[in-house]
Structure formats: structure tokens, C-alpha cells
Length: 349
Ligand code: SF4
Image (tube, rainbow, N blue to C red; front, side):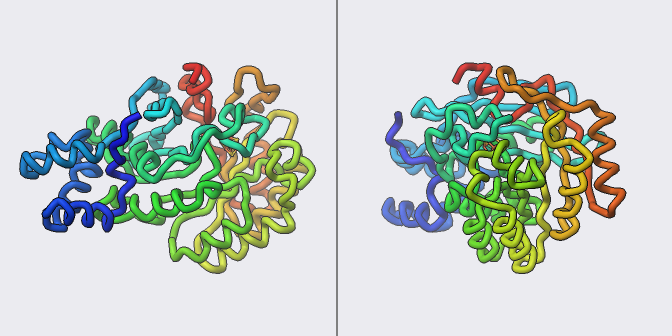
């Protein structure tokens, strides 16, 4: 593994301090970050408005990119999944999700950990647990790689969701720092309101996040509308009852004024019945939350199935019939190892 530090692991202050040590003015920091974030260069040599000697010196201490692209799949709908390899042999997935039709929205789904300890029974990323947290630089690099891919097609990255491999709030400091840096004008300049952090539901961290002064959306991965089924599907949820979790979401709404969304992955015959819809609608109405229903993407070796489209639409109508706001998110990735962690498993990393 290279001992050079990842450029994107350095805060702007630390980068400026390093430049000061090298006898360079602070403004070079912005110049360098602009090359990395906005012009997507991969090394210091390409930063052509820096003195050649400085480029060489920086190149011995820092690296602009750390990841190697190991695999890439693209579904007919345009969803592109990238498998990135890091210097220590760890691999993670990042996904670019285009909006349907002519809409300009381009979303990147970022991973925050290598694997995931939460171990949701229906998820490929949870198989094998988590081997380590990603660093801020590794999280940011995923967004830069996707922004670079989009720039090559004349498109721009517009939204970021922290919904890839890992539990973002279990890597709390990195997640919050990455959010702040994605948002700055010398970063990718993504508006906070276009950034969503998902969590399986860690009440203490939700309270902490509410106090960060951010305007991001919190997405609660609920997946089951009662404690018994949640504990069955999400092992981490066993010790965290909805009685504790939902008030934390209410506090988040009160503190930030930002709505909480409820993510609910429909699993055939498991959580997609009439009674489940009624329980979910009650939670959504209480939290004034929007429900995102997702059609499950089956994972080889796991016993869960995708419900029929009719059944999913029936579930959606039950929510709406009692006044809950809900959408059924069309899966645009069945052909692209779309479920979280699937490409990584297929490639055998
Ligand atoms: S669904 Fe998310 S939280 Fe659950 S195991 Fe997979 S990556 Fe982890």
C-alpha cells in the first residue's frame, strides 16, 4: 500500500498548512482542490497551472486518487455501478442513478464502509460483515469518479445519497465531514438539500446529526413497520425499538425543519401485506414522512423475492388511501447487479 496521503483526506486547512511548510501561498490549496473536484484530474502532473517543481514535490507526499476501477456495469436504464478497489485490497461499490426521461437529475450513491455490520437479512453487502470504515477521501473520491464519468457525457452530478455499502451513521465523523465538503464551492458544490444520509436507525447519532446545522435529508431505512419484523430483517434493530427510534426522527424534523423519508424495501410475502401497509401508513402520518417504496432486487443465495408489480402498486395505494405520501421507486438496475453489494459478490471481492 502506498504511504502517500490521500489528497481528499486533507481538510483545506491541513492542505494549506502543508503548502505553507513547502513555502507556498495558501491560495494554492483552492487551486489544487479545484483541479481534483471540478476538473477531475488524477495526478498532480495534470495540474498545469502549478509550478512544475511543486507538482513533483506534492506527488511524492500525496496522491490525488487512491481507487482502481475493478468492474463497471450499466443497465439499460443508465444506472451505472462501479466496483472500486482500494490500496489495501478492500473493495466498495458506488452507483450513478439517472432520473428517468429528460430530467437532469444525476445521483451518486456512496458507500461509507467496506461491507456492513448491520447485516440486513436481504442484503448482499451485509454478508461477511464490515471490514473497515472508509476515510473521508475514499468517500469523496467515489463522488469525484462518478462526476468525472458524467462530465465525459456532458452531464453534471446533481444529488448525493449515502445509501451504498455500510451504515453511514456508524462512520459518523467521516459521513458528516464528507457532507460538508461535498457541499462547499471548492468541493463539488452540491446543495445540502440535495444530499441524503440514510440510516438503519441509530437514535443517538440521529440526535447528533440534528445538531450539526445541516439541511440534509435523513432517510430512515425502516423496511418493517413493527419491532418484531424489524428485528427479524435487521439484526441491529433488535435492541432499538420503534418507541425509541421514531421520537429521534421527530426531533430531527423539529430541529432541522427537514423531512425524514422512510425507505421501505418490499419483500414478497414478508412485509408487503395489508396489515403492514396500515402500520407503515400510521408511522408515516405521525412523522409527516414521505415513504419511498423500493422493489427488492433478489440476491443469489438469499431467500427473499421481489413482489409482483401489481402487488407493489396495491401496497402503494393502501398508503395513499389513508393520506400518507408515498412513491414506488422503479428499479432501474435489475440487469446491473443492482442490489447493494451484488457486483462486489459477483466479482468475488
Ligand atoms: S441494507 Fe444497508 S444497512 Fe442493511 S446490511 Fe445492506 S448496506 Fe448494511
